[in-house]
Length: 332
Image 1 (cartoon, rainbow, N blue to C red):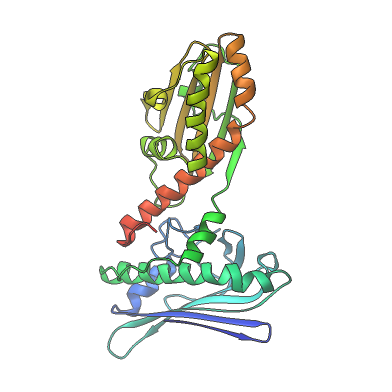
Image 2: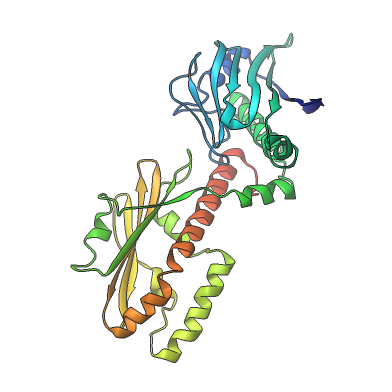
């Protein structure tokens, strides 16, 4: 059950769920909130909630751009978080655990805050739909963790799906990692290299092969269109077509695998490195001749945009897949 009130500029938003489990069970779930073994937050479907220490007064953190710190905590009963100004709210949100006479428990999330500046417009259009979907997933998670029963899945609204697709995970350009040993030793000499990383959400696969399949076997449609156009055009200038084996795995070690192919104009390798909270794709290229240098001069400006888009899509797909397996919900 959920409700939202707007009193002048004040927003009050409440979600609650009756769970057929003792308060001690829900209190234990609450105590792990924001930690490494958090079983309450709906990971990995959403940006993880992170606190800088175990749940207690003074613990600081947030999820995504929403930042807050703990101002009140009653172990097993209640935790209140005050929003930081950079979040765009002046107020708080809190979780409460309330015992029922029949032995069940009400788990409630309540937010009460004044939106600041542009957030007054962003709240009803963007933040509230995402917030409502996140908290309902959290309550589903709590019910499953506490009782072992999965609530009936509720598909997300088209608007929420659109909003989530418009705010993909951040992909960072970075130096080639020292740990990407397969990439670093792929060629004795290389003419170009780059690397891009995305954070691993808790519960998402750390198998490099799964990431490689998600990145290269299911790219965004516009990337697939570019690849098909490339295949149609390169033969006209005497460059070999890549074919389906261009992204086959050619080497692997724990936490990393290497893909790539050799051609008359250039050789390339792509390393997929998973570990230490992130996944990194590293590309190294060896050019053979003038044709290869001309080809790379055309492709190189597009390369970062293509790689970023492929990693974002893979991160979203793998997170949704992991959430579906955890929650019993279909991929949404």
